[in-house]
Amino acid sequence: MRTGQFNGTYDAVVANAVLLHLRRDEFEFVARKSRGVVGAEGIFAFTVKRGDGTSWSKAKLGLPRHFTFWQEDQLRQVLGRSGWETLSIDAVVGPTADWLHVIARAN
Image (cartoon, rainbow, N blue to C red; front, side, top):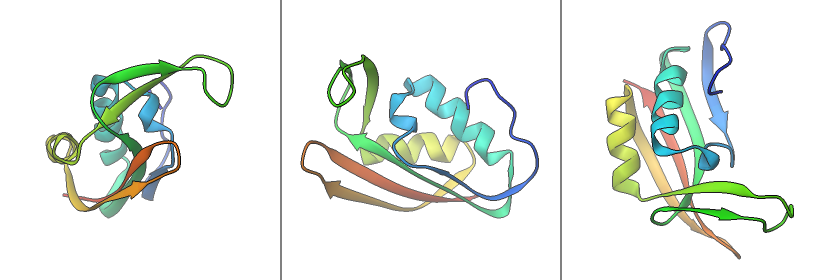
């Protein structure tokens, strides 16, 4: 998603527990890239971990993984700059982490 091409036009881009591994600048790049491949009413749906800052963890897989944490207002700003209208951001409390479930529409 950072370097590959999206071929075609899509109704939606869905990324469940994927974008949380991107740095903030990479996330914004992918948001802009996703906006470029959806139609006029296209949807961008994704989940990220709720919180502040970044961290590395070996939990679950035993391999190091990078996480970027987000707050609702940060996501709204990035999405707006990237051509998306935020439809909903739902905070979901999980057993090991809190999540933000996001749905945005092409603006």
